[in-house]
Image 1 (tube, rainbow, N blue to C red):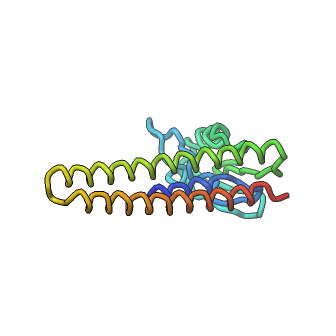
Image 2: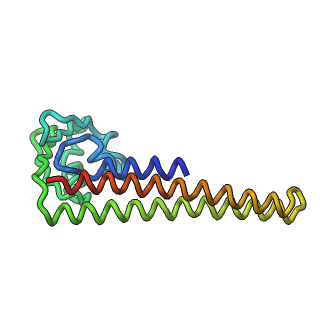
Image 3: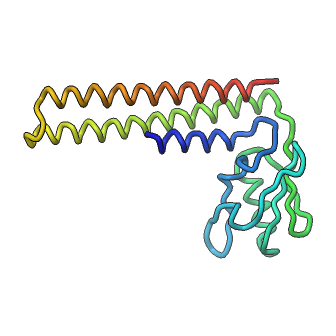
Length: 173
């Protein structure tokens, strides 16, 4: 459950809120040498100004692939190449784009809830299996089921809180 929550935090970091951040391009994967690799393995990402990202690509032959990967990642960015440096201006968010980002945040949160519920299901299955083997009693199995449900509820609440915070951040004018 901790892993699912950490993944959600990384995904939320990738949702831009009008400010440049290296985390914004973390999910970008570049087609390099016949396979897709993370952007940070083909170049150095920097933030020279509040509304600009730069990627210093190490291999000149990967500059165009890097530009294409950033453009096609679905973040609404329009990078431009300048030698081995790729400049990525961060445009001002429009009302329509804010709604799209909010929907994306909700999708990420829902995916995380599904992952947490999957962990709950695995825990419940293990508890039932131990009860069937006779390792634990029915009362203990019910106790563990209640504990697993309480833990799941606390993680769902943390996900909802993180979503509310990110939604507020996205919708700030």
